[in-house]
Image 1 (spheres, rainbow, N blue to C red):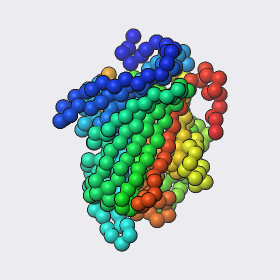
Image 2 (image 1 turned 30 degrees about the vertical axis):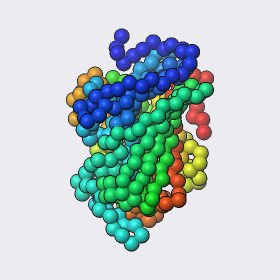
Image 3 (image 1 turned 90 degrees about the horizontal axis):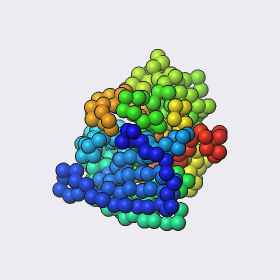
Image 4 (image 1 turned 45 degrees about the vertical axis):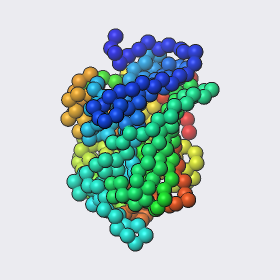
Length: 377
């Protein structure tokens, strides 16, 4: 049996275990294993809060790892695809690596041509986070903490970040983001795991069925920066409202698909405009007909970036070997790209005395489960 597969077993209790791992850097990083009472397992490290693996059951109850990564964990250190990592201060792109706030212009780290991407050249993914594990009656997890000093990657003010990873006995993996600041600054934290619910390094996700509860996208220019407009998805390859194969229209003759070399776009969640940010709403649903696995994504954020791994075939040393093009799909819940420069987009500015908070939940099901019939709202 493949090392990525395990027989499904019930366990008497959930558990948290912590080991240490050398990444070839100055200090070892903690490796945390979360296991629930159903046998689901999530492993991550303190470096960047990077999720190494998620073992979840298929329709037969067999566990398999459904996230991308590397056989050699140390390869995450220089990974330009941000696989499994926490992203901050600002997920996605900021045009020309600049923004103005309260009459002052800020120059940020340029790491995507002229633009600033995923927090810069040394963003949250590149730092060691303090890890504090916990066990509760129906869930296990850990609180991760990190301080980003004033001037880090060009951002104003000191930011103290807290992220809580929680695995419940209902096969839900919850990510809660918190931050406080001592000066006004953009904050848009995200998680950058790539999913493949029928895992094999040679397979792609084009036969996965995706539903996105969004009637609009934020179209982009040739630099993948939003134009500032909202574009309806109806009648376009971006209409996933009723669910369709990811590969159904990915190679259509469409300007936006050509720019992204596939899907690499922010979807404006229908519930986002009316959501107070206090309660996660259903954003997307991913289904693999071959294994029967289902992933539901809920979030308090107004957008979700769908990225279909349009360059993943450049990775030679993934889990089990080279990755195929479109080997995984990232479902990045977020505020809209370039928000600090787009006055019509929901603001990402957090000021002293305000507490930043957002939550995203990943719920795993299988099509044989009694709770999996239809999409729950």
